[in-house]
View 1: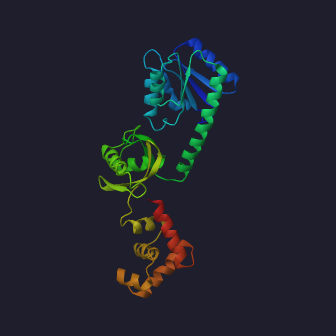
View 2: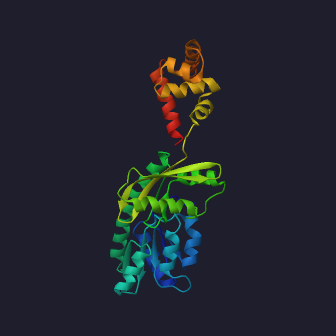
View 3: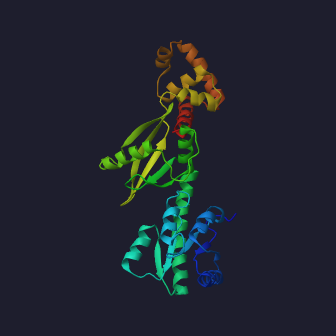
Length: 306
């Protein structure tokens, strides 16, 4: 399988002569290229070939280039791919349709090869920067996603997809977010003035999902964080992550909340001496020397679950 952003250009055109001419020119310019004769073929191959950019004929037999692009952009896994339309259609309405379908550029026939290659290189560079940003988000392990003003998913990190799949006990395909999630997204966007502070809690089966509106990246792109509320699960999380006993994990929860030994004694209905014994075991198991270090470990572990 080709790796993403290896400068593989997919050329989709139902005219064999044009397709061969474009792929040959790209190869001569040092870019890998593959020719595909129709829109459906492009959709079938995009997952395996992982192109960096698609050059797409707007008018083809069967599935048009515009419809092909719309379907491609409806899939969050491929929505980031830059699409350059090539076509003999020159009317403004056709240019607008291409851009509205998700294209980043529009080149009219007859194609000036040097110009097309220059445009491809510019869009490849921009796409790499965007790809690096998405990889950084993925590596940070954050459950983030973006939608347009209507709640249509634009992209999501793998962590967001996995979290939602776990809650609804099924694998999410393409852009099939549950209607309840879309409704809450739309409500948060409608609040507008509360961007950065708005959040919404959504019940899913026996669990819950919290989404928070983080900000706006453009006139029609909104960023969200997705998390599963901790809500009383802190002790269980610490017990599983650190190999603590039930009581030790409860003590550590209150330590991380800033409670004194006497406070913890009253809360858990145990003697201060017993609290100290639990603390000694906690310090040993965590490999730390004081309350502040233990609290820092606990806070980090719980935060990683959000």
